Length: 503
Length: 110
Image (cartoon, rainbow over all chains, first blue to last red):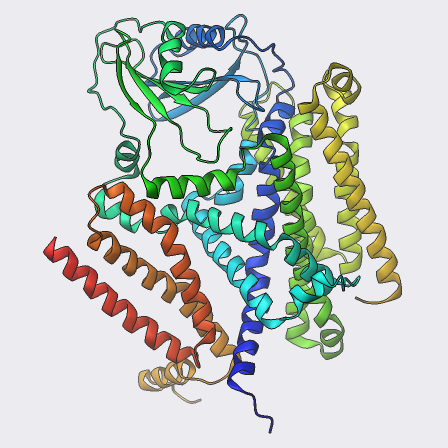
């Protein structure tokens, strides 16, 4: 009988944790990481998905005047108005309003104040929401929180079971096999993955464990009102037109900084007790919280400003800022995108390694075990390439679905899930090597053809946007095509490799 | 055919819960990590929120928000370091009872 030391036994248990936790959480984590990586370019994807919205930039006061006009025309009886001014990477002027608990939003032309007749779409926002709640709100964010803890645990246990991994990385001992790619991308992306997972965990933790919030407040609204020191006003019915927004702008800029107003919220618009909140943009600093200045809606009198935050709030909101990565402009965004993709590669190769390692063994043994590992392999295909295909299908659906369709935004999301379901069926139906290469090639083809589809269906095709210097739109096309080429190369390499050996 | 009585059923469950089998150990450890960890973090969060002397509640909430995920992580890893799954469950359950009573006491004195 072989005896193990206590340390060896502990390492063995960590290996079990890494293997099985990695398998089940890895599926969730790949989805979270991939859609989260796409969400880095949320403004660009939204811009790409709204090809009708191409407007000239105007001064903030003109934008505000246009927004006020459009809101009064379209949402005179709303409970709250909201204006999202063009800022940083997003040059679109958006208005939204709340009525009886429902939220509506439209893009408008800042020059005329007319609502732009666009297509119904959730844009890049779908990815950023999907990546933390998986389309299931509380249940989703609970699962994502647990998976995030699993990710941090997997990093620690991964280093524990292969203590040489960091040394190997810096000695450039990089091999061309699944395990080595898994470990080397893991070490390379380690600081980023720790940062992004921990900060993401902090963001979802209030949702998945709302204990201290429930100790002090009846509902999250009460918490947020106190957190933001919001001014509360009773409801009024008397109709009085609000103080013109552009006229308030200089006073707000004096409080929050010239040219830094990002959002304007008008509570009880055109009522006696109306309240106007100007909010600072958050895309130029790490602290992701909106400084705000409140004004009386009717008289335009300055009420209160909130620009100082306590230490704990600064810690948490800075972590949020680090997670969303809006500060630092494009260099930062590209860094997040590339490291996010590296994280995806780490998770994907880990998942593949799980099955590759066992493939020979279970093929020989047969029985229940073989069926389980085959199913795991099919789920791997459906999760990894299926998620990529579903995401690119979402962009395709945006171009192909008829513009007159009712509930068009939901139809795009339906397309996303429907295609993903098809990929699940395909993965279980085809032999594994075939399933991998076919789905990879489909994903690659769809990515490479995206610019072509864009040229055929809209007026913002690649040649025009390049001439116009519209890099927000062209960037999406070019990035998709580049990723497509990379996917094609991976498919080609895999076919060559699996033609010779089985792993 | 053998008739399985209630006591026999209970004995089967008991032997399964106390089993040394690697698969059972692994599943029990995962459950200890996820559910035991959730319970312990939950009660700790309650106790901390009630005991911290800060005047502003929002500050307490923010503090819990960044600290408690780390506690949960440590508990998860510890569930796999503990000598056996049963031991991990025992420690976690007693931890929940102790920290939970502390939270209860704190809520009485507030």
